[in-house]
Image 1: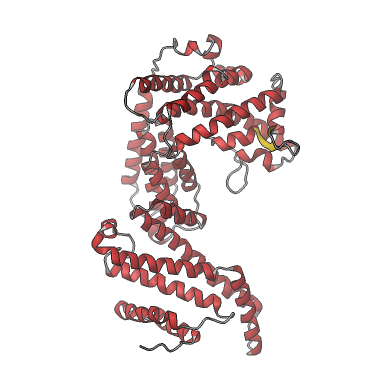
Image 2: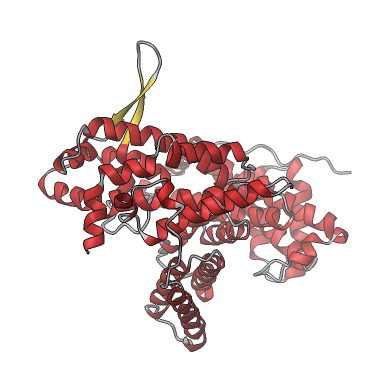
Length: 503
C-alpha cells in the first residue's frame, strides 16, 4: 500500500486534469483515485486554502452526481424517489449522501472569512515576489469569483441534501438543511417546504412559504425556465390546498396571482394548456363562492354572548367562524373517544385575526401612510407593515399574529422587580386617541395582554402538539365568557365596524 504524502500542489494539478476530462467513465475513474488520495494530501498553505477546499468540495460534488446517475438514483436532473427509498440501494444512497456532506463541509470551510482574507493577502504577497503585474483588483475579482461559485455550490448542496432527507423521511435533517437552502435563496427548497406544510395541513407555515415563493424574483429564470416551472407548480399546490380547506376566496386570489404571473412572462411556448388549468380553477372557486353567498345561521347561540347591537357589527364570516367553533366543541364533548381539539380553535382564532386585520390593516395602515407623509417614523414602531427587506408594504392583504402584536405594543421588563409590563405602540396610541377611544392606553394594554395569552394556544393549533379540552375552555374564557375580548374589540373600535357596514 502506497502511503506516500502527496503535495497539495500536485493534488490541485490532478483535480484540474480531472475537471477537464470529457469522457464520463474516465472522469469517474480519475475521481475515485483522487478521493482515495485525499487522506495522503498535505495540508494546504495559507495561500492555497481557499482553492484547496473549493476543489475538494467540487470533486465530491461531481462524484456524488456521477454516482447518482451510475446507480440510477437520478437522471442528472431529477431524483428517483423509489430508487432512493429502495433498501437494495441503501449502500449507494449512503455513499452519495456522504459525498454531498463532505462537499458541503468543504464549501463551508472555503467560505470562512479568515480563509478568504488570508488567501487574498497571500496571493498578493506571492504575486509581488514573482514580480508579476497583477493588480489588487484583479486578485479580488478572482477571489470573488471563487466565493460566488462556492456560495452557489453550497446553496445547491443544502437544497439537494434537504431533499434527500425528505425522501428518506428524516424530518429533522430535511428542515435543518432546507432552511439553510432557503437562506441561500433556493426557490426549489422554498417550493418543497410549501408542499411539505400543505401536505401536513399546517396553514400558518404554508402561508409563510407561499409568501416567500410569491415574492421570489430571480434576475434570470435559470436553465430551461426551471424557476418558472417551480413557481407555477407551487402556485398550483397552494391554491389547491386552500380550496381543499374550504378557503375559496383565498384560493381564488392565489389562482389569479398565478395567472397574472404567467401571462406576463415572455415565453416562446404555448401557454394555452397552463392557462386553461388556472382558469378552470378560478371558475371552480367562483362557483363555490357563489353557493355560499346565501348564508344561513341561527343568531340564538350568538345572542348568548353578544348584545344585538354588537352582533349586527360582526361580519357574516366571523359569525360563521364563531358558530363553527362552538358547534364543533359541543360535538366533541359528546364523544367518548379521545379527540384533538385543534379543529375547535381554528375557526374562532381566525375570527380574531380577521377582527384585528380590519382594525390594523384596513384602518390603522392608512393612518400610518398619512403620518409617513408628514414625518419620519422609526421602523421598529411599524415593523408589522414592513417586508423582509425592511421596506414599507403599501398594500396589506394579511397580517401574521406576531405582526399584530408588534403593531399594538411591546413587552418590557421592570429593572426593580423583574416583572413584565406592556408599552403601547406610540403611533397606535395616537391613532386610538385621534378616534376618541376612551382610556386608549388601558385599552391597548388589555388587548395586547389578551392576545398574548391566546398566542400560545394558537401556536399549539399551528404545530404538532395535541390540543386538549381545557385549552379550548381557556380560550373561550378569554374570547367569549369571562374576559369577552371579542365583545371588547367591537365595543371600543365600534367606529371601524360601523363604517364598514355603511360601505
